[in-house]
Image (cartoon, rainbow, N blue to C red; front, top):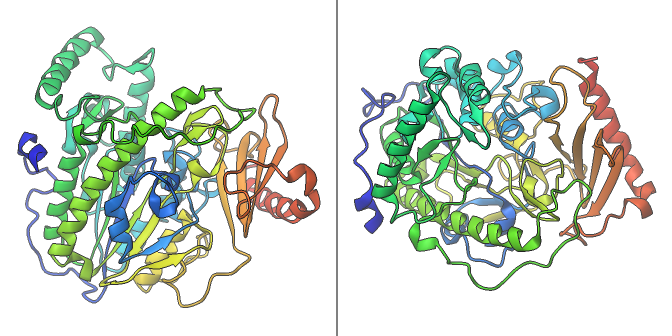
Amino acid sequence: MKFLAMLPLLAVTRSEAGLKHTSPRGGQSLPNILILVFDAFSAYHSPLYGYRRQTTPNLSRFANRAIVFHSHYAGGNYTTPGTASLLTGTYPWSHRALHIQSTVLDEFRHKNIFSLLGEKGYFRISFSHNIVAMSFLDQFRSAIDNFTNTRELCLADNYLADRLFPKDFTPAVHGESLISRRGDTYSSSLFLYELYRLWTSIQMKNLIKQYGELFPRGIPQNHNLVFMLEAAIDWTMRQLERAPRPFLAYLHFLPPHDPYTTRREFVGQFDDGWNPPPKPFHPLSDREPDQRLNQRRREYDEYIAYVDAEFGRLHQFMDRNGILNNTYVIFTSDHGELFERGVWGHITPVLFEPVIRVPLLISKPGQQTREDVHTPTSCVDILPTLLHVAGIDKPDWCEGEVLPSIAEQKPSPERTIFCLEAKSNSRYGPLRKRTVSVISGRYKLVHYLGYNGYDDQYEMYDLTDDPEELDNIYPFRKSAAADLQAFLRERLIRADRRFK
């Protein structure tokens, strides 16, 4: 491809130095596990789940040899609770990573996917473009064999504090962000801001000169971390070739998280004149106008098409090199993205389907046909599923279940799924301000608590007859909601008990 000629020859990262083809380190009969998380990827924006724009042709090809989960939910509506729930198999009310810059409770340093699978001899690999997700990986670092820092796969990295305090990654990075923030930008320099600004401006000008033609909307970046997905995919291929067997790799890429700076060939791909029907503003919305939401939706779809192309390149590599024959490949996300009801993004108190329903596709070793699962599932199910694959019993503290089509038993029709938003709540106190949703069968109940002008409010939707969540049936179906309310109340009381 032409764009590859424009990419730099990346030096081998420090985590790769000395990593060569090796024999298995134990558990030779166990399959490899590859978890691919693409940040802020909503299931609502893939034709696999009914979307009208053809955003993911490569993911659709992958689906022909995978299990496709059609009603899969994140644990929260942004990276912190979503990632923590995936890695620990518990809901946010248990692991308590509630805030944008928080980590899990100390007890989960050893209650996570890396620690548990390490006991079976898995070689554990981790990487994230997202500095928030990297905080969890740093928290679990003692259980990770190949820990690759975000900056090792970045074109530019302007953080300083973690270099000065390498043993205190999370407080150093987030403290630097808070102290040095000016307006809507991060200086990422605690001491010499003006010098820093001059240096970074020169650095960015050079990068724009080098890659501006390839990325006309701007080089992909987040919080002043400038990166290219192509480089991360190339690095991933090298890991899959060289890692000791069996391996567990958790790889967390930022696209399609905003800003939506897609590659040149995808710009304008969806200028098709289509816009979804408008929906009324929610009482807790930001009242973003539909015209702006529709423009952002198109740019997001173009960014997803870019992600899909790079995933297709990785999938082709794995197929060609026989990696799919002995590896569970898991494609998912930590949360979705919203472009409706006056809301853009995911840092929002509302929990509508596009922001919490995420793709989940699992390809079993050697799988040749497609399976479809429509039973509601949760990201907390991924940890017990992988433990099942490795022959490990589910621990008592885990709140997930083994996923359908992986376990022999059929899922319970009474299964209940939760999602929680509580970033304004105290980490060590009862959940006094939060939004929580509970999904059971065809119904979804949402409870808003502690918001000015919208306190102690319930919404209920029939996801079968009303998948767009246009009709709040709670005022007319309170009797039908009573069981869900009672069940939710009991779970929240149990979760709050230890923090009173």
